[in-house]
Length: 398
Ligand code: FDA
Image (cartoon, rainbow, N blue to C red; front, side, top):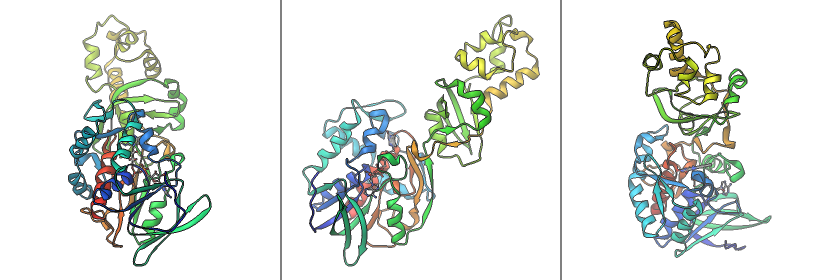
């Protein structure tokens, strides 16, 4: 990337070269703006490269409002309407980026995540956009312009611009360059912050469950997991550390420290009724293995004599089996935290940011986009769509 050790002026400086920052650069660049993007990481778009299991789930056919969490449940609607998944798909198609729908409307790159980053680079390439990596922002001052002190290789220099877009993301995966810098900028300009916590993150065992259940590591069971009237239906994956898999990541956005979750390992049938339809002469273990892997049956039903015939089960035992299977109350020890979380919940309070332009209500010409804001999507391409929509809107207004 182009690095210049001199002072210069830009129409717009963007801090953070992730999904939101790069899209804001594209959007502002198409309006003829002279744009500088700075990132302290040595490469741009690191999270794009590691996303979607290496194939970047870049959007979803069904971008619906109930797929987003924010203290202000209306804030994200305008940006999502101003730049929709269909607008993104038009660009993707125009640039010949091969992609496919995996499931539930989730759109992935056909080959690899780097194809999506190449697509973003191709969007920006013809525009007056300069990107400086390995560059830190050490100071921001607002006079008539925003004056930024930038630092690269221990040398500092100053630069200025009429507008500033903060696109520094959240706290998840610090090893990929995540910092709380955006929150510091928000504070500097008088913005209230909402408490942050890890989202789309695996749960860890409490001590009691760990002893008994870590042996199930590697087992995946289609389940429904619920809390606070929210339910997600998908695989639950047992790991050495706790529970993971799509349904677990989804529900983690709704879970608070100390709460318990309700898990149904057989959502399609009532176990007691299903057992009544089986041959009563068969052993309990034999029929349960028709439903679940052997390892799960051995460990989950360890207090039952699996050699007993189905016909011998008492009503009390059938009731107990139903409870164990349809209402397992799981109290996580915690989550794996920002180390593995896909997103950060909370952040810059949206009430002090214009939903129409993403400009700060506290400081003219200052914008916040992407994950730094208190907007978090479900798993499935919703977070990247928010990054692109919010980046686009700020780029149109800066
Ligand atoms: P993002 O974090 O992408 O970018 C912020 C940028 O700011 C980074 O480049 C960082 O280096 C830079 N920065 C931070 N502090 C700075 C500082 N002090 N100075 C200068 N630069 C600074 N979502 C989705 O929709 N589909 C998916 O498939 C996935 N998959 C996925 C996998 C994994 C492993 C993770 C961790 C996350 C996902 N996500 C996802 C979530 C998605 O990656 C996330 O929501 C977006 O990247 C957010 O985009 P932003 O541009 O806001 O932040």
